[in-house]
Image (tube, rainbow, N blue to C red; front, side):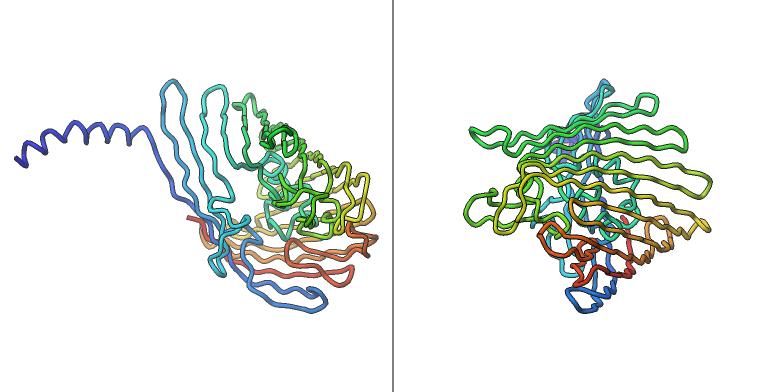
Length: 378
């Protein structure tokens, strides 16, 4: 009886083997943890543990199935968490970093779900955020180079590579009955790689950013609304009817080194005055960044960047510098020092103060942070 059952099961097992050969699922992740010294955090110096300030800790599953004819079904689900306490990040979402499914073919890739937009993927990869993430990002990450927001309900298309050129676009309908455009997001981008040169441009158009981008739960003007903006650099403009972001960047690699330049223009349109957003009209940000990195030896990289941001009524200057030592391809020790200076009046109508990444704002126009972190990839 047992032999008969085994004989009958053989075709099923053989079929399962064939299916397995045509599909794959990969578990991957990254853990980032360390210490940071901040000379002024709400008026006091502080030393604290820090997680995700270089790269957000995460684990994920990535899979594909060969459908024949050059077509594949693909998916990615990616969780973000805090290594210091194990809590979920991205607003407590189980897969807050990414969650999408799609089809890839010789004609391009279409994916649906919660996704990064090309401003983060292509312009952010040229900027200092690709070296130091949050501590190296432009003040408040108002231009989304370091994924200040991801796009929910997104339909995304990425073209095949044509002589180094790729195009990308996202459309995310608002999903509000009777008001199709309320939370609508769309993006357009192009990326070009030719030998040592990488160049990219991107444009984001986000309606009702309080809800669709900044994770707010109450619409501007409604009872109980509070700005969901995470930084005084832009939080006073978060009640805007829409946000437009244009970004352009170029980098050049030579030997063991690489230099990059990034420009972004961000516009908050039709700002509504509320108790926590004291502005009306529009606000414009222009940001200019130059960065460089150099492998002194194969296991030691040194990098530096300078960013100048002209906000609507404030200015921010930031310098980042530090080494990155690689124990192996998967494990490295990263040290960075950051200085930021602010001047003028910030988005909340108060004298502008420095606010590096998400480390908390200073009580003065200046702030210095030194961060040491250990990263491991699997």
